Image 1 (cartoon, helix red, strand yellow):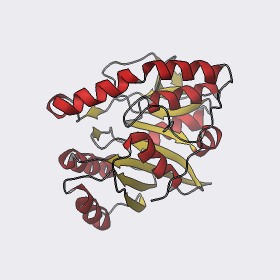
Image 2 (cartoon, helix red, strand yellow):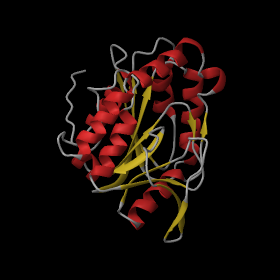
Image 3 (cartoon, one colour):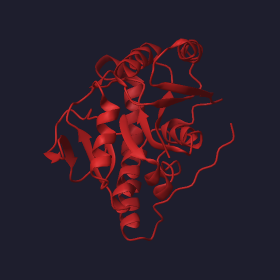
Image 4 (cartoon, helix red, strand yellow):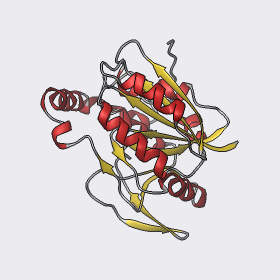
Length: 252
């Protein structure tokens, strides 16, 4: 396999935050990567900006990119799944990032270093949760070990082997913006992997004034609507009455 990471981002409006995220991404990412952007039919200038920016950016670590515009907002789970369909199958790692995050320097190298030092870690990311977790030592690195619960996919890195085992994000059970990240992390645990964050936390831009009004109400309602479904799914995955591997097909 190639020692390359396919970084996947889903965009939907919020161009100013996307600009900050991209500028930061190219500044702090020092591991060979491709970038796959799925645009969920943004109504602002996001798509034209992406095309201009990614055609002109220069970085010694940046290999290539894909921008895939969708004709409607299919939500985060389907958006990420379309990205997963478009990764290079020879790339060793994949990463999800939101379009409103600031990542710490060398984040990708550090995430991958943890997984290579201890393959029991099947997902390692950057912490945006607002609280830190138990620190454990993995060789010469400090990891915030998540003994339970999910790993936020605002920035999460995982190997191709995990994708082969558990497939795609659950796009069937959680609506447009539900608990697909929690579901993905739980299935990774059932598959036998541990989850953790690197030592240095990131900054979430899409909070405060950017997370208010109807948008906030919509996300909260979607989350609450599917909590019972999520808990039922977890029991089914653990009891092996529901397969942890989820398939996905989508025609652009």
